[in-house]
Image (cartoon, rainbow, N blue to C red):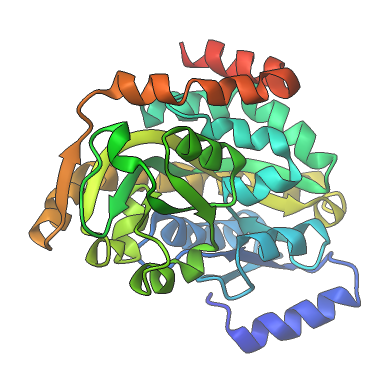
Length: 322
């Protein structure tokens, strides 16, 4: 079931003045049709009524209907809406440990990421999130990320020197591009196409699925497969709402989020492999990095910045990725 702007405003008003224990779940996210996150949210909305015998339904508020990722996350933490498939950067503003998943060149491939997030590391992040009023139900995928530019490929660190690049609101991403000599700045995803078209930024970084679904390859057609970092899509619930559910409903909702997540992860993996050919046919120019180790060496200091505060988690991440 789709969620209209009017419906979103009415629901938000009602929920602000009443406890968030409704049988109708508002599930908000910022993706547009064609994105794996959008498709998985629709699947989740079908699964929940099936496993609750129709007692709980889901209204999907897609395409940033209920605000950008930061605004949606704030609404979930405050119990204004029940759930969101959100982004790693905004979550890291509330749960700083989540930002460590985005350390540069930490993960080689998506199956490795999923194994890590479905294990001890995911449990550690969920425990931290609960202290901030959020329950992490599971981690959907937001892919291995690459750089796209309006006028050139960037196969060496030197090619990034001075580049005005949009990043998510994620400290580790900003730190990595600063280490590479670029000039990064965060901006909401929904505002990115306009900012690129107006020349505020020369380029941006995202997985191919996001670049293609938002048609960013039409604005920044030079895509370099840097694979510089990973980002998750944490699926979060309001602890105010979650703690009021009975165990059977909790199991249903968490199971539905995980099942839809495997569908989403599969789409992310398959699209990441197939989209290059599609985008090239539509005019994009791809390049590989010339020396991956040069990028790794240039960003090694980013780990040192966080070792003091998050050494245990970074150690767990490094061990889990081996």
